[in-house]
Image 1 (spheres, rainbow, N blue to C red):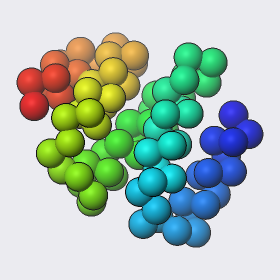
Image 2 (image 1 turned 60 degrees about the vertical axis):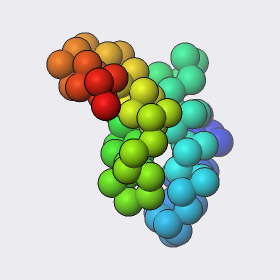
Image 3 (image 1 turned 90 degrees about the vertical axis):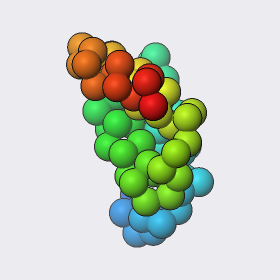
Length: 80
């Protein structure tokens, strides 16, 4: 969790660091952390600003939705 917080501080100073944003997603989605809402926000930024047609990011976003019980948005992400 500490590493996640440090990386989020980096993103506040340098929001264009998409490499860091991907690492934040992976850390936030780790089973010991479970911050799927945070991961979802970062994934939406990556899909909007960096790689809009990335199937890996869409699958991760679907997992975030499913983890929160949001099954319709999860299905839509999997369909993409």
